Image (cartoon, rainbow, N blue to C red; front, side, top):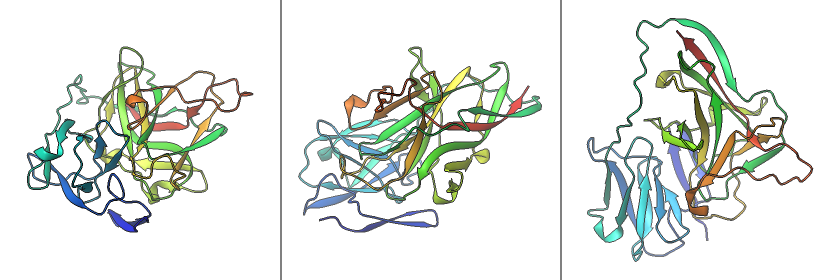
Length: 294
């Protein structure tokens, strides 16, 4: 039986029919994931059981529940931290520590640069072909966005993500990746989590409009991947009422990759085309509003 629990994200109380544990069990223990340096808890970290199709995430207090008799190792990841693999018997005092990760990227020099304009980059103002909601596997969709001039620097002010609905059952976070040599998403360049919230969703426009100007995200790559991830949940594979993003078939070029943390070995692949009459690939509807600095 599913128990009703509550997650608090900022000032938003989210009630949902989920259990923060790997399975429905009578004996479980609460574990906290913590920053080794600051000793502060880490909310919305991803927890995956090695060898089993199970996963969950830490709540807003950095805690998750786990079966006391579980013997599998856990794989734990979070934006801004080094991922670790740990066995349950290695967990001391119900604490798991993550080390901050220093992402080594080319230095973005913004000093003495002047704003020369504003642009909207990516996919916007297109028709919807289908929608996608999470199956509980830690689904993620990212879209390639090309920057017009790699000699200039682009400061992201807003990220817009097409969506048909917002339901606060599964938290969703934004990712920004470099483009790897194989053309797929590479290094995650964010050092802080950006969580989609109810106040970001414009029901009339059918999109999230996320103000990220305070995060000081500067880009000077030829292109980046930007997208969203649903946290994995124990009720995977079932019809879960959750936020659904929109996809379009208006673009002939395939710019979108997807993956699932608990499925298909966490490998990036192109979204499937369900409608056989559709000639173009499915792409997410993601755009960014940027200041261009020269």
